[in-house]
Image (cartoon, rainbow, N blue to C red; front, side, top):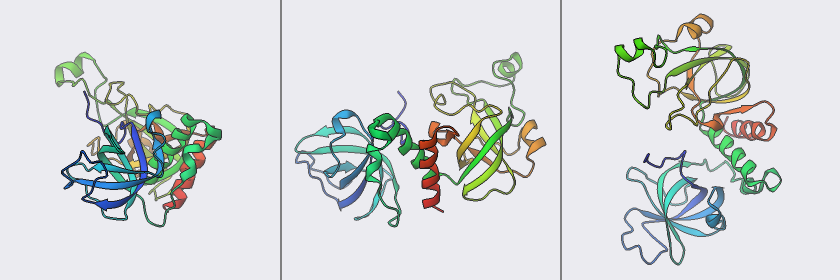
Length: 269
């Protein structure tokens, strides 16, 4: 079973660290890696945990995770233990700047539709974490840096193909407007996995003609130093990005999600 990550954690909330080295659950004796956090807003949650807004919970920090008293952030957690209150295991958190307000109404957004509210919240989160947010159109899609076509005889005999092979592709996005960050040219290259493997199936699969808002993240995943043929011919001076979450692309006709992305981008400029 794949480890739980920020992307897959079933419970995520915005909260404020109330006390380090503490717990409000009597069953927890070792508090060296626990903190008490006040839940300010539910980002996503199983129904049984949706009522914890305004309550204090005990969070067991991940091995390399550090927080400070008063810090605000989005906590991604698993491993629920119920007692007098709730204790959870963190898989990581994203700090929220002090100047950035919590948006407590987001869990009730989209006319009370929790699914729509969740999608808006995820879109906003991804935009907050993105290096660049742009409105644009995919004008070309091609192979990444001389990669062999998946599952051909040449590919199989020339190298071992892992079951989790991403089969990287490159989409050239023509930028129509920049909402956050900066791009060196009118086109950017967006690398994405064509694979439908469990590791990659949530990632968007781009096609020429798609238009919308892209939350772009610096490419630290593909490890490809050069562009493929299509990207090199159209965007020689472009920068390579990734958009690996389904929330990183919002089609132009998804007005509420687009608004959430643009609002988050404006808040972090």
